[in-house]
Amino acid sequence: MSEKIGIMGGTFDPIHYGHLLAAEECRHRLALDRVVFVPTGTSPHKKNRPVTPPEDRYAMTLLATAGVREFSVSRTELDRGRPSHTVDTLREFLEGGAVPSGLFFITGLDALLSIDTWKDHLLLPDLCTLVTATRPGYSLAGLETLPSAIKRALKVVEIPQFAISSTEIRARAREGRGIRFLVPHLVENYIKCHELYKDSEVLCT
Ligand code: NAP
Image (cartoon, rainbow, N blue to C red; front, side, top):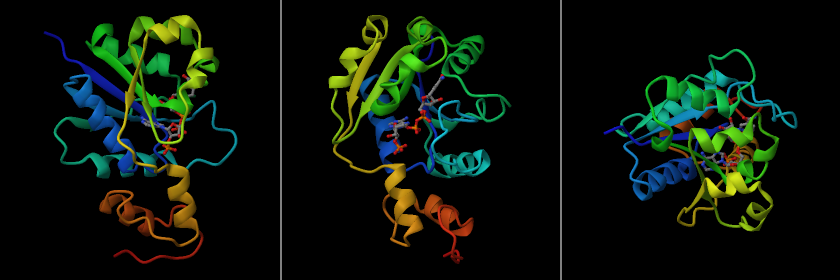
């Protein structure tokens, strides 16, 4: 029988416990065999802020998932060398032997709400089941406006209350507020060592 694989797509700038919790909850609820984290490469949609270099986001994602048997990290979007499109990523997994009924693309609700601007978005339901992980404070009302083909292919997985976001973590790091217990310790240390999200020098612990 073929595997059920969750593709956890995101910028992961940085990855945090909310992402890990969402991946684990989706794995459990959808009976996935494994979850592959796919950090974005050059995103066609990220024009409003500078994004941390791909290799730093990849390293943090590796550190956060290391030691979890069912989690792995893919470089596919990082190595693509051109803008990342989910449709291309899903096709790569299918060419690698996955079957559409066994592929689940997981991302955040606010990312999913703009899916009708994504390349070939109407093809996505033929390639995978779309999964959105909800978080506190986000209304599901916006989903109503999505194309019906997308709505039919969509599963909503409610994640336990954990109001945490990469935006909040970047702000805390920039302002010198702690990020301990919001991200895995190795990720916290990586952010300090590489002085991500702030200008002043921080020593590694
Ligand atoms: P993002 O900035 O990573 O995330 C947007 C929102 O969704 C943020 O609130 C984020 O929270 C949350 N989020 C992101 N990934 C999540 C996950 N796996 N589980 C739970 N919450 C998550 O969004 P993005 O860079 O637009 O990309 C999201 C995914 O959509 C990526 O895989 C990307 O390749 C894909 N996408 C594809 C296209 C296309 O094909 N043309 C266009 C846009 C996006 P945090 O800030 O806390 O992470």
